[in-house]
Length: 390
Image (cartoon, rainbow, N blue to C red):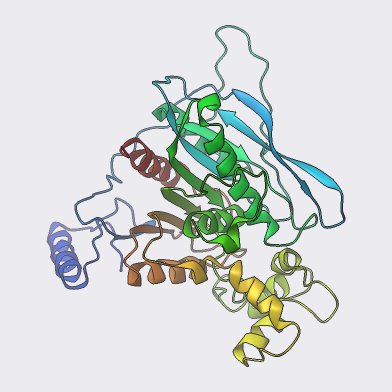
């Protein structure tokens, strides 16, 4: 269900009337977008309207970590070596008491990237201003875009986690859960409100952001990274930019208009695929395609079926519950790394579970940065969730 910019007034009102009829019949409400480039799908709350035609222009502001390279836990890699998990904390310019928090989880196919996201703490002189307005598709463009929440009185935190060449899943979700608990345990130290924490991630970071938000209170996903077990890892909202939602179907979910089936299988089903590395299923003749076959044939007694269960555990689609927090989803139609069908299936499942969500497709978007317009919308949405929570 979507809406496009009408070319004629009569058509405009006809579309609005049809939209209203469908909304009343289905309980799903959406609003016209100002450009045919974007399609908006929205559910709950019915009284809320996203003003997509009035997104403010990106501000120029200073980006400098208030607390840099904070070690929130020390963990073991699968080879026994130890690693410090770190985060950078950026406090807002206007700090009126304990602030809400937006945690950013980086992407990189679970195998590359870090909490710095190419960011280098600037050496500043009095009067210096850093411009972080996004006009490019660089790898850290999403990081720059989401950091703009500091303009809205929100603390921005970028966290690191063990990569797939260091430890296989569920190490990654255990790590980011540990980061949330650390922030809650040290709320007074960093001047933050532990009851107002949201999470955002792109690509692999989107998958982890979804799992983080959707599994609050589930001991299977908590782990003990960093301790602080007396604190929960719950968040009040999630922003997901094109995160994988079903690890077993990435290859078959590819859009044939933009990627061939052969290319999709090579990208996702082989032992060298990011999903295989995340699951530790990388020996010759292995790969996610084998696991999908085991699940389809229900070969539950096969030894490798344990990897099927692990893949399902790593798939946010399996964690949809009516108790999930509100979720904002953005996905580019031409994305060949994470098929858009992954987000479509998630949005559909959230709708059926009566979970508040907004799902926006970008008809011109591929993998990577989705443009200032959608980033500003996401920042506006999550800021409203954090700042309006009392």
